[in-house]
Length: 331
Image (cartoon, rainbow, N blue to C red; front, side):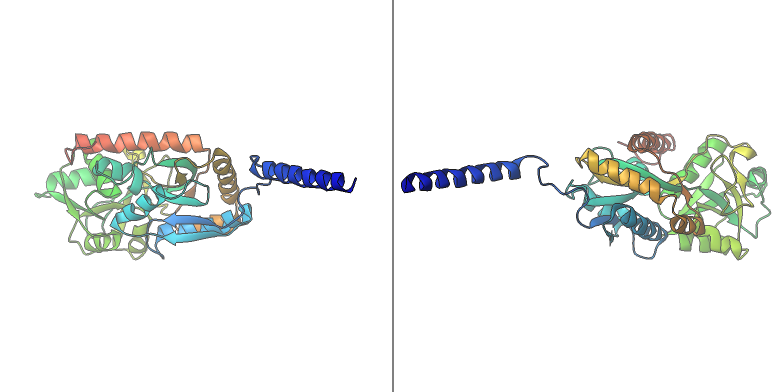
């Protein structure tokens, strides 16, 4: 009887071990709900810049919604391409997300066929965060106040007008080329290394005009640049004195800079869904809205599907501009 009890006990312990092991291996049996650890947000631009400011403000609110800290990881270099490539190669587990921009997706794909990442295949769309209208501004020394006067000055100046950009292949370089295609104006491109030197050259009268966005605001406020037009269907509250291109007869000139959250391709759908909901809730936060307004951003939000559709159309548009403008062979 004593021997039988030991056998029974041995069998019971073995059975318990089997069931415990089976329980541990059952999907979701003891899984903690997502997220259960900090999330890394890769920002492919330097700390302190406007995109970094947006990423950090979003990260704070997103952390509140998710109950886990969102840690910003600045991976600057190569006009944002280094950070984008790093994000594409990150684990697709929901714990690495990425702040993508028009520059690193649509424009980069149009300008550089040999990117180290594929904006469509390597990323899963999560949520459209915000955008910012593009703006045409001229040197305040010029007798130009609207698109009609741009055309007139180009006809009578006796020279080719010039425009400055933040760099060859930058978003605002392609925006200016789209403007040229729409207006049939012959403009000389003068590239610089970033917005500040480009705007400074226009403010000094060395170049006639420039396309950019919120980065021109200090030059406009100081009276050195004059805003002429903005993209979009209505005036931009950040620079209310400028009317839209469409209202001045230049239609189909859309080129808002967009900012959105993506995850590495293969990230679990439930993680993407939870991130999307948290981002949309964050965009109603008074604290985040204050940061967006102060930096000229317009909150957007929406579904992953809507973001994916927007990006695909945007990429096709800028590839078409590169091809029509004979700028560089697009893939």
